[in-house]
Image (cartoon, rainbow, N blue to C red; front, side, top):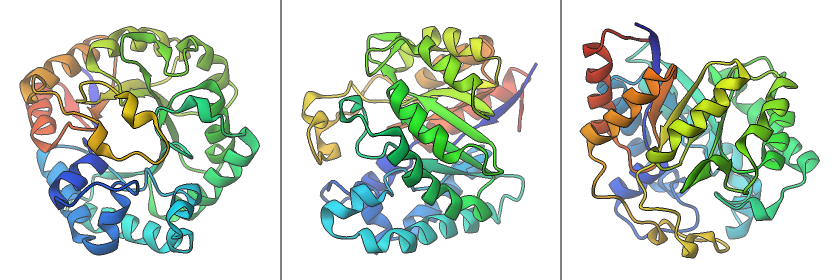
Length: 298
């Protein structure tokens, strides 16, 4: 039996759902502007479900994204809100950890935007450095190309906190990044940076197993947290989209998702959780399955 780190599930998507307002390009960042307590409540729900890591609601907090709506000056105030909510929730679960989330610089699933690695590194470093006193690790999420990976790793590695990086793969082919590049092409990059764990995220659970076979070659702790979308709609791959363009699957309830995740554990994954549309009920079911199988959640 193994020691398994159980991540939380959807943060941004779940917050938008709980808030109930019309979706905006700011995604869940807007929740912190007028209903910050929802963020802390969600973190507590995940801890209560059995998660041992709280992922901060900072995925979309970038100057580049805030500048579109003339709110760039609120960057650090919003970071403070997100981090405070995570820390307050963790106070009741002192053995839990906080992962400082860093999403793509401009947009998710858009490798075509090709952020310059040097510019991206500076942007990520600014946010990561601000997070350092408040988090236990840095988590780069939904990395869709080798170039995106280079930018974020150059920015956040070597700052004194463990770095986890999570890649997103094609809906129909887990061996390829959303850029179309072979997933195996990230392995040399991982070897040249101080990376503590490598994961697959925000991908269909059906393709995760083939992706895990590849990232296992990095000889690092590995795992996955998949999404519950029908797929990434073309309408979402436009400038400043809203989540209204994405549909939730109806066939991926807690038991079905846990079945996929337990297979990942059987393949050697030691870090598992959920991404968009995978909520507290899914994580609770996964925690039950792990314990029933004799694993220890750490």
